[in-house]
Image (cartoon, rainbow, N blue to C red):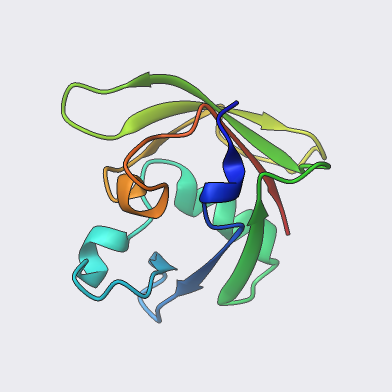
Length: 118
């Protein structure tokens, strides 16, 4: 794994009244629609929050509850990740797609592994 200390260690996500999830990112150049969680990530957020509208997750945890492992970067941008569910959350997808905004969060690259705890 690459040196993860150069990446943010926590990310906060919030849900609008529409039910859509977004990552809170202080770089206001990235408009909110580009920060929307789709393609499986919103399902994971629905499950881990227990009905709350906000959650902060620790990324690169030593004891992850969910691990994302990069499968490939996609031709149209973004990357596919396999999902390992360490705690048996029901109805978690086996795979998610992470959009190109991730490159801003992770300083220009898609990490090989993201180990998530909350």
